[in-house]
Image 1 (cartoon, rainbow, N blue to C red):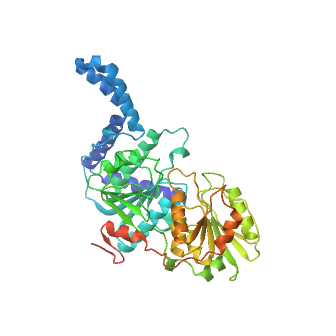
Image 2: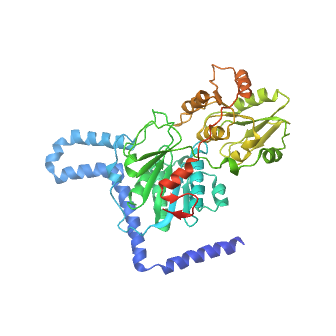
Image 3: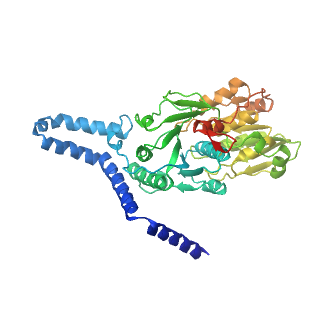
Length: 448
């Protein structure tokens, strides 16, 4: 059966190649050459060599080289760390610009959790409801491809840089650039949306060659101020979307939308169904515990401490959410249930309280579902300011925040179980607002 499938794929590719006109093949070859020219022009060796040969062509520059060459090297160094715009990588557009199709390419980056992925997944689901004829294509380094395939979203995957042995940043960005160019060439999308904190140079190079494609960047608001993105990154995009949180920067054409969630309250299982699937008694108190992907620091001891304290009460059952991105946690107890699923929000109506790390998804889902939550923010994330986010829950009265070294965990868990959540915390799903920003009529299957 595998051989038959492989043969079919090869035949299809051969037929497609044979159907191309000589002009089409020449155009594709020219596009590849233009991409290679761009890569050469932005290389440090080319730019230093150009500086030297320019001095040879204009001999009056030669005496100035002891000053201009070090300054040029400093400039190139600042470009590489994002402190100066890289002019060499901008301005080369593909000569042939095809007619755009009713297609969008979504690029969620891979974080330590599912924040970027879930926002793009939610947008994809909302777009499909708005226009069933829209082709929705994913390009992502996230490893959880089966989720997208189950929903029949065509997906292109490139493993993250650190999954490769001794791969430099420039090599990996070259792969991103080439793969995105091919995706754009095949699907000819009208829209492109990136969700991530740090824009990849290869991605910026690829989208800069598509002047007639609308480009959006979705960015969380709770960002650590010390982490700056390359200064020229914003110039590559037509608009910016901040989903549900205050932003630390203000950009032209920035759109603030409500929090984005994958599933709504009316789409998840009822309390009875959720508890039946978890084999949890109807009258038990059920606490959901999810403390992150486990890749930033060692969370197992922290998880064990929380579970031990909760299970000391005979009427409490604990449901542990084990991240698909982390290693399996070795914990067992007769009143402990472990789920390694996506999205875990399907179970939320079955929970009475939760203990969370404070990532974007966890925070806004607990808020929307009205679940009292103890937050143990992870302070070792690269760019996500979980402390800033979690403090909002305490101000609003539906959450408490644990500060390691200052608070007693047992006391905080007791406070959690006695917490009354104030009403009217629910907000609309921002995915619908994103659909409207892109020019679609939500829930009507037609475009504006």
